[in-house]
Length: 298
Image (spheres, helix red, strand yellow):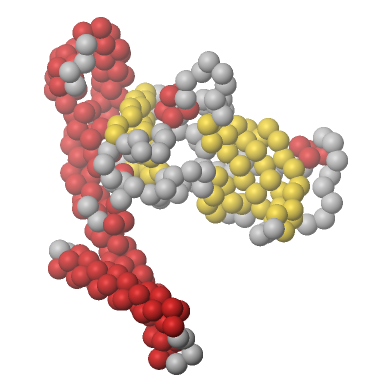
């Protein structure tokens, strides 16, 4: 594991999409409904439900739009862009509404692997602080789709996609019934879970049949390269992040040493500054040692 593959902080994030900044989906769960339907939905089509003109401290006047996912009917997202002039009144808001923002992706939040005749969408979720990171993995082949949730120790989208491809090939070899029975034993589930697992296996099998064994085997080979590529990119990013941290700390140390040697800091303040310098030097040494380990491990 590298630093770049450690679990990031998750929340509602905004990313550029043309002239708009668009958020990741926010689950607004009606009372009595499960959030599972929203987590399994690809969230590709949205309908505007509200818009307003607001003034922000950071960006000044902006147009803020709220939209609801037309697939699950639960997830909502927000988008905004800089705005000038007075806001139209009443129904003029919707007469002048822009077309929906087209599907877009944030590499730190979701990725789509396109294999031509089928695609796999992988999206990460942080259920709650301290809980294992969860990936939603959805395979679509024509009218057939299969979605599953899996816990993973690190953020490797391609590994999650490869796992579903392996399952698609396995259900073709084993048949849905044998696949469900094997999964029941492997996951040590109670016997009353078997009907649910049979339904899951049938959905998986329908997608596998629509794709075909030869296409899946070629996709399986391609995912091995994607996994290696993703780990490599994360490893390089971790090294670059370490170098940037070291550079920032070097600059801070230079200022602290200059203050210490100036003769203007005395008494308790000098003692505290000396301790800060010692601590920063130790931290810098640790960062350089970590960078060296990562570079030698390439």
